[in-house]
Length: 546
Image (cartoon, rainbow, N blue to C red):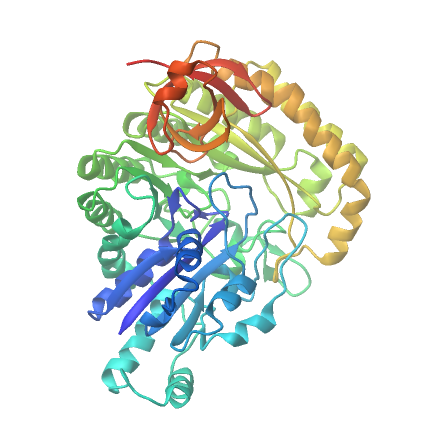
């Protein structure tokens, strides 16, 4: 069978899949298909839009070249994207309405937890799921493996009665099925072969999965004794306590990706990198880290890939602060093997102690200050990229239970205390909570938060002006040279935008008012940029001639 994997992009707290990132979903799906020697094609929603525009009116039925389309999308972390436009379920239905083959839906949008493209709101297009022949709420690569097995074993490939085939498959296959990590080892390696099909190849960052689940699943809240963790988070609800991928499997996946020309990696898909392989992960909510495991993992990745970029994502500030010796050892490992501009994103959410208590957040302001200090001391030195090696980032979330008008001032004062202490933060993310199914945040909480919306917007602007901008100047003083900035967008005649590759790349406006610079700059090329000025969260610079 001829399969098309249609990547509408995913973005979750523990996994990126919007260009320049290529997430795990499409690669695991491809691996499952390659296992059965199927004909696999891959494209992104942005490329498909271009192709459909090109082929419309020319008498070519573009999509019906395929026997099946596997569509993937869904968001649990709404964001803004420079050079990508994620798909919605409604768009998938519109594009595929005349498609005659089998239609499968996977990713966050297919799950009971739902999907959101903006803070404070959840998309409710469940009725559109019935358009698809197979809706996978579980792990799509595992369910797909079972579906293809049924096709092959029962000789259903090429069967004419599509309706009967769908009915037969759906009666035998569990769409809620999830996997153990040993089941995807082969898929992760085989799926590396699709990276060259990405329209942006080789300029893509590969997301690497390390584990899922969270030690916060050990917490209990509510009369029914449901596992909860942080009130707003789906991770413990979906996966329970941590389940780790073994180190050798991750390294073998990286080896396969490197053999396909990949040079940029983000070790993500986990709530806390510092807790990877912790022997206490199922005993304590703030488990002691395992520095030896992190050393083995990152040394192994570095040795097989020689990456141009190797970054991480999330880290729990409580783990870092309350296990200082082990955390400093891990930070040293990350500085040694990872590349500059690396960011450990702290899920702080709020500094307000009332909000912390009501939302089961666990992390105290003292934990945040100490964790920020540790990473600044261990990772604050400037790297060859122009950015410090490893800095913390802070995530704040509004719309949580227990907030009042004083919450904004409390958060401001604590952030200002970090700044006044002389520390650096790579970035501060300020978002509104989304009431995902199964969490302890409700629509009522969201409506209650709306009365503070004006204060939310005022607070966000104040942070951008009074903290973000000064910290940016501290982190990249004028004259700093940022290496290998990838040009992505032309804003107007004399202004382009680009970013270095990484977990949380700094937006760089490139001034080309000089004719010599205008003559040499091209979208899709890399340049070294000297910092000349600052925005609220971005910098302006000029091209350094080599």
